Length: 384
Image (cartoon, rainbow, N blue to C red; front, side, top):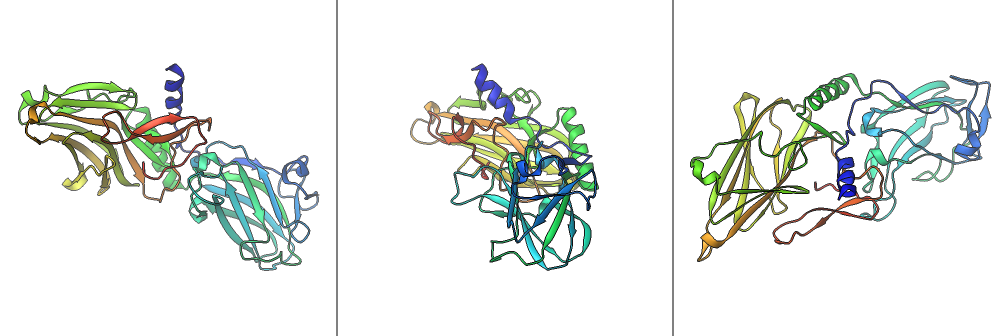
């Protein structure tokens, strides 16, 4: 049990903190052939340090090395100094490789193409938004290899005369506006309002994981006595609310959070029996949006404002059949997550040790599905 708790603790580690300084991935010093393969050392054309990497693309069309860095998602993109002897117009493809996603067929990676259309030194900077995705790559945090290609992907062979010198490969800081948002989120995290999850996602509530056990939620029942009929049970993945027979439970919590950078608010609330869940979100400008749980137990609400002011969660167990009083109604509350405006294809539901994945399974009462730990390779999920 202690091991399981430790593994689930890793899931909620702060993966989305802001980095204000660049992180050097390779200064191209030392024994380059041990890291990059068949390349030459350049000691005359050097941007920083005492040497750089000389790449004759005709002799060696493909370069690559293993990279072990901190969470790539904490940074804004990649930066690289490149010297070109001639403006040959050669296309160069950079690919970033996390482990292959077992859920998709073929290689899974991020890629960015640039053209050698200059002479002399040029600083290349690529924010993550410039990187396209091949199939379904796992999260940025799992990237383990970087490659450069002068041929392939529609280019039959390297363009003759393309000789490049590479220096100072680094992860670049976030853009000022994104950095300001991350720092604001960090302040909220320190106050206990938010928990970073990765890929820019933020957790508002982790029911049953020490952050929220309904004590922060106010009961707003029309009939206060009806609330006492609900029994609360702690679960390792959340909280279960259950009762016998029909009834209604209404809970409300006030917030005051900057949500301008987020696209959707997602609540995980799986139900059993005839219970139904709906959530109403209050944004600035008195915008109220209501949504009901889908067949996967997810309530998705688009963000419509700069600040989230409050949430109201309603569970209604309606009578069904001949003996409604004997029917048990239940809802499992798991988490509330803010998802960013950029498209997320690789979820951060991957443990840091890469030895455990999160998979779907069916609980004993058979109404919906929840997360369990499995000893398999990590998978990225886009439906959580």
